[in-house]
Length: 199
Image (cartoon, rainbow, N blue to C red):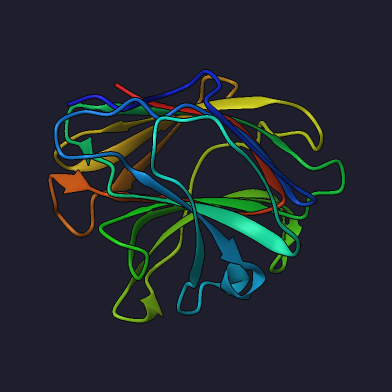
């Protein structure tokens, strides 16, 4: 089953986040797209406050004080590759991409930090399980620029997530939860996501 989320079906605009999104669905019903409140920034218990889109129709939705997005009920399986294209804000401090079984736990957290949490120009990866962060993983360079488009791919293998950064360098992060499929992807902080594709 392939969910292709590239060209435009819904355009969702709010001050912190612009999203061009297409939802093309497979067998078990569409993914659902949520906007999440700014309370999620430090990864407490996430709040999925408003359903944005779960249908194949065009819509424009405005909101205030929103800091992120959650895509649920999708299928990212072993053997597939996730491609994300986005743009950090011109004054971005950091942003995060999260993959997990639900919106409460994260098997893969990728957090490029321009200047945040005591780090500068560093990519930090981690997992969030049982209400706690696990051991941080730091690898590779920092090929991100504030205000400039990036493209990353995340290949899901049986043992790890193989991330290819915009400069072609790689990050190897273990599949700590060991599952063969994850159904939730979320984005946080200072980034505008332009497209997502799983194939």
